[in-house]
Amino acid sequence: MPSLFVLTPFLLLVVVNLPFKFLRKQIALWPAVGGMLVAQVVFSTFYPLNIGRGIADPFEQFFMFGLSLDSLSSIMLLIIGIVAFVSVLVASSMISEERQVFHFLNLILISVIGMNTTVLISDIFSLYVFVEITALAVFVLIAMEKGKFAIEGTFKYLILSAVASVFMLTAIAFFLMAVGSTSFAAIKDAFASNSSDAFLLKLGTGLFLCGLLIKCGVVPFHGWVPDAYSAAPASVSVLLAGVVTKVSGVYVLLRLFGTVFILNAALQNTLLLVGIISICFAAFASLTQTDFKRMLAYSSISQVGYIVLALGAATPLAFVGAVFHFFNHAIFKSLLFVNAASLEKRLGTTDMDKIGGMGSKMKVTSATSLIGLLSTAGIPPLSGFWSKLIIIIALFSAGRPVYAVIALLASALTLAYFLSLERKVFFGKVVASPAAETKASFGITFSEVLLAAITVAAGLGFAFILNTWLLPLKEIVH
Amino acid sequence: MSADLSQLFGHFMIAIILLFIIGAYCILASFNMVRILIGLEILIKAATLLIILAGYICGRTALAQTIVITLIVIEIVVMVVASGVTLWAFRNNESIDPRKLSELKG
Image (cartoon, rainbow over all chains, first blue to last red; front, side, top):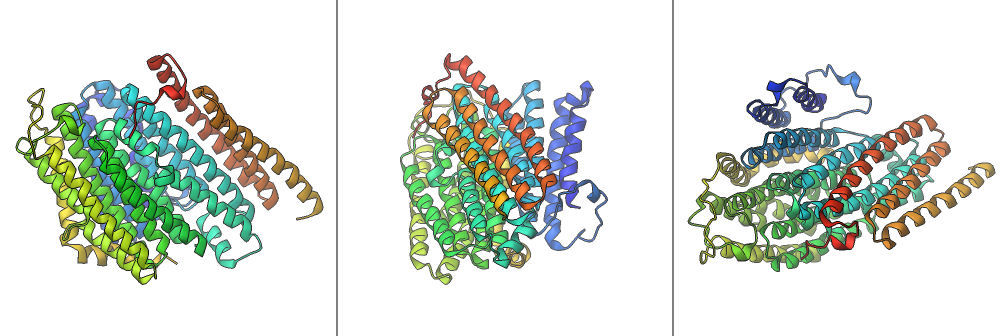
């Protein structure tokens, strides 16, 4: 079963590249990739409901590095499926040239293969390999338009990501030295047995954390995030902000620091401190932004801060909260980036000083953006409220009341900067009328409604989600 | 660790740390995109050497070999993409000075 999530996109990639002209027709390409991603969403939804779990895997012997599907990876596969599908939908209405479409779909398939394998794998070096494959596909996607900004954003992301890779590789070398293997199980045993190589393990953990914090883009290492997000083409920034940095940074952090490594007090304090600084600094920084996408990027840093903070509390409840916030953040941040794409398509800019009073002209965009930002700010009964609530309760019960109070207050700051955004862009005076009276395209409108519906549904059906998807997570946390 | 092994470890570590310092200095001190890429290459080479050393110490040279070969492939692909970006930057700006890449701020 798990190997299908890797083999299906790979087969599709091969088929798309066969030298037959009719395969390159757009009419065949979009439904193929979209259908594959919908299938991924459906299958990963079925996993926690206990359907198809007993089916033997016929392709298992091809994978020597051990793919395993557990409750955490099934949630990740669901997120990857939804956000990549939305990104393809947005791209289908933004990109029209045949060659560009072909390149875009190839690269998105490679990045989906990379991300799916990243969340399924159980070996630390293979994990690094697939994180790097995802990142490579995304570098090219960001730079695809070859503009000045795109190249600057790509170069910053590329260099910082390569430095992060060096940190991670050095850490892997230390783990190999101390454990003699690179599988998660062996590393977990070495941590539990408290052997004589404890120093090497500590060194490796610290270095790996440095690398991952760069990949996550939390505050001391956040420089590349706003540049890469705002320089990328609209559909790519949905993918990048929604899943790519989350899977290659935050998922790896959750997997390794939540289920494999054992955190000592110093490491917990580091994570808590990094989390709280990210939340506050990025929230203040986004107050001063004038570009829609840059503001969303800073808000993204601040929300990742909540996940890191929850991980620092190091209790099973906090882990559940972190994963739920991961899910919610992927959904509502993609929603807000789709809104930005809609504005960009209509007006040709995302500069908030040049936009105003779009509320009456773009009804769907303004309504869904309101849902997205209220969920980000944690207003009940939307989904963002529940995940922040779990995190704050977990912080209180872990004996960290100061962090809990600061996290709660920073949530109000989120509301402040998003309300100022909403007032500038959707209410207020009309600054400039749209250059071209283009009709809102079906792809963008549909994905806005879809993501807003998921946000509302996840908030209202919170009890069901908690029991079916989130509580099984407690089994994999030690 | 025997005396022989610890002496080897010491020599190797000195070389690796030197390579790390050279690579980091190259990235931080130069204002040339190609030199930054060369610095990254040196850093990755240092990490590769460390993995070889790790495989030797824990007695799993075969595992270290597979890791190093995979690593070399990945590294080359990263460098190809990076030099492609550098080439585009040169065509756009007529310069490979990273200080000229400063349009995005805030």
